[in-house]
Image (tube, rainbow, N blue to C red; front, top):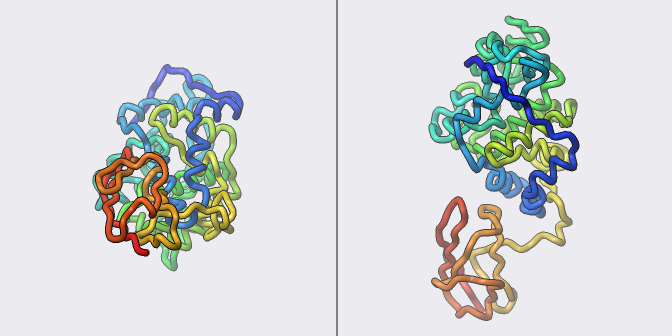
Length: 333
């Protein structure tokens, strides 16, 4: 797909303006506090999924990556090319998600997953994963296509410029967080695992965390993230808060994010004792804190206490912007 766009790129000049433009950022990080592992990753899936999917937004990629005049940034080579030379490149291709057609359709409209690169690079990449190339078959400046030793196998791969490796890693972190599908296919099966967490294979964790650390977020990457937020209503949290990756796949994996363990709020559970539990927490990592709740058909406004309920089973209903349902809790002496 070729581009030509006369529109001017909108630049955010200082980081203070970036963050005041997105007042929801602190709320997103508040939801992450006190969580670890699957619950931490899931909190970002809930709060960082695009609010708007629109294929028309892809026509604005040249403005997001615009440099000077008609030049755009080739995000694999980290060098300028003309917009007429540029093609859209999905970092996570829909071919890796063939068993999940809804998600594969959405990820091709998600600008956080889409880059611009020279058309010949996009063609040679096909659906190969990003990894260090040990035997080169095609060279495009500082972008290599060839073979990589990965997971005790020799696989096809593409290696971007060093200045682009961190960007690629953070897009992959985002993709497996927002789109945790049940079965990865094609080359995606070499990188990803079919589970909610960690979702990355051990070899992929080692590789992409190395890229994430060696090529940290810069102001241009942050600006692009916030421009995309303006269009589709979500951020890539690994760009705005890059330390999160360490808590999921890095040196702090397994540690609680944001607060001390003693400060962790109690989560919703299946059974409560009137003797031991005074209050019933309605917090859960699977629903936003703004969810509405009902107990035995009565809407809950404020706190829910065990003293207000009789012993036995009670029906809790919930409704959020994404889902609704019910569960049963048991009250004992």
